[in-house]
Image 1 (cartoon, one colour):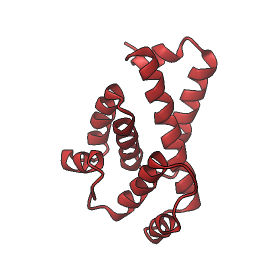
Image 2: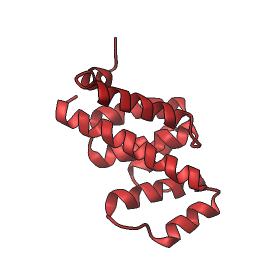
Image 3: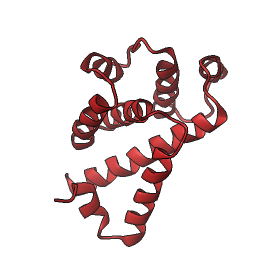
Image 4: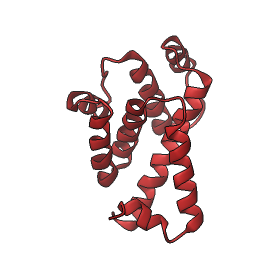
Length: 141
């Protein structure tokens, strides 16, 4: 059985190819699986995508995100992992307000070892899950 997202994207070969390419690039990128899943949990929660929230909660557990950490992510609270918290603060800021990020968020992230490559991969993670979330909203997955 194919996951619902593949069936949705099957209506557009370009969309399916793009989605698969984005996911492959993300897996091969600079973020750990737990960081990717944390981003996907946060974005899915913020956009109200119950389907993706459920899927990424399970994937998050397999990537090492405990239920307590996932609850912290959904509640926009500290997880106890300073690097992860710095990444999620950037995601939250980008979701909350348009425009340039505050310098202190970037400085905090850099202080936790976040590189330019990490920041670009962070935006890729956000774009990938946003793409999936809004597709699910259209198709009522």
